[in-house]
Amino acid sequence: MKNSKAFGNVLARVRREQGFTSAHQFFKRVGGSKSLGLAYVSYWDMERGKKLPRSWRLKAIMAALGVAPHSARAQDLVKAYFTSLSGSEELLQFLSGPAKEAPDLPSRELVETATRRMLEQLSVNLTLEQWKLCTRDMVTDICQTYLNETAGWVTAAELVKATRFKMPAVKKALKALADGDIVDLSGDKARGRHGGKTIPLLPLTPATAGIRAALRNNCNAWLAESRLVAMKRVSLRMTKANLDQYLQHLENAVKLATVYGGVNEDRRESAIYFVDAKVYKYLPKD
Image (cartoon, rainbow, N blue to C red; front, side, top):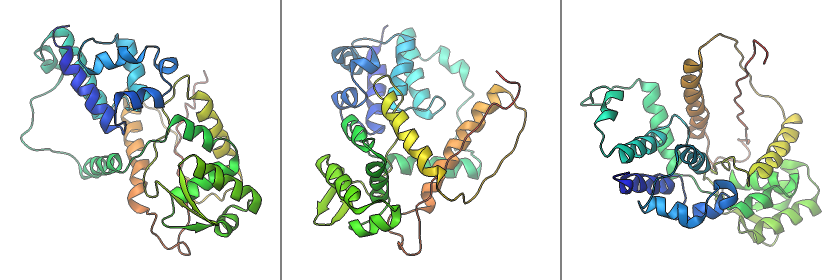
């Protein structure tokens, strides 16, 4: 482990790019030692270049950071990890072709790359406690979504009309969201503090599994009574390698929807849509 500092620098950079302003903030927001399986000082030593994690622990850290397996940031981390292990990039050069003088990407990939970079700048992370607050009940969860996707002040009456929830339940939810520093409250009006920002889903760790399950249950229950706008289906045989490549494009395509949306749209001429892309292993049965 000749150059742990190089890995630490990349780890700290990726952590910041994922929306965590400090190592301590990241450690606490993802559930601390319960999720990562190590003490804070051990993680801090990694960022400071004093030690390298085991390979399986690096995978867990990447998952907690919300780094996609085939993303550029994942590649940066893995490259820095093996460079630190070997002491140089000499062997890694055999894994990639010669660098090109200028990018030669299909227009689709250029759009995906630009969109991903834009989303990274517009992302904000909620704390673990704020996520727990959103799962307290369906009313709180849906009201938070509406406020985050709407610019300016929203009256309780507008929320009642949009959600069909009862007024007392809406007011109770708004009070809870205000107490949790997720929305601002002024009389019977509320305003999301993160309006227009993308809020990435919590990474799956032991500490967040229950929260993610509750959010998923709320979403499924809400979608069951929502109007389906469009659906496309296809079945095909492909290799695991091709599936992995397609899933990356699918993820980018879903994120691309953000380009078409905006919190400042006229509320009378717009609605809030939910994009849900799923891929099933169809045959043979496991």
